Structure formats: structure tokens, C-alpha cells
View 1 (cartoon, helix red, strand yellow):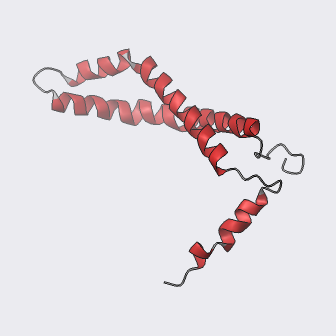
View 2 (cartoon, rainbow, N blue to C red; view 1 turned 60 degrees about the horizontal axis):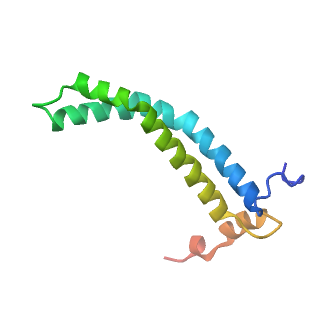
Length: 114
């Protein structure tokens, strides 16, 4: 794919496209399961502990369930914009994208004497 020019992200449009694809993949594969099985129950438990006289854990869980669409939309936008910015920020203007990897391994930071 690199030889065909598909992976070259020196163009803004390619960087944005790959950022959107990466953001969507991370959102679907990692964020949604973590949100549903770890974050939502812990958030409900924390809300119930903080607001103990006024709200139970079941009520806090119901409140999170009622707002899940807003939570997911906000998180999706954050993932898409964040990944598009990161990929575009990491791109090189070179035609040879492998120079980035070569520079990382030859960088003096990694080889400094301490």
C-alpha cells in the first residue's frame, strides 16, 4: 500500500481521512465497550456515593442511560477530531514517509548517555 501512494499522508485530505478512519475504529472497538462495561457502572457508583442522600445507584444508572446518546455523540466527535488532528500533526512533508521512522530510531534523544 505504501508503494501505491495510498498511505502517504503528506496531503491534508489523506491525513483527515485516515484520522477519521482511525478515530472511528478506536471509538467502535475500544471506547464503546469500555464505556458500557467499565465507565458507566463506575460513574453510577460514584454519583450514588457523592449524592448518597438524594440518589441511589439505580437512579444514577438510569440517569446515565437516559443521557447515553449525548455521551456517545460527544465522545465520537472528540475521537474523530482528535485523531484527525494527531495524524495531520504527525505527518511529514516528505514524499518518503519512512524517513519519520528512520529519524525516530536515529534520534539523539534515544541514544543519549545518562
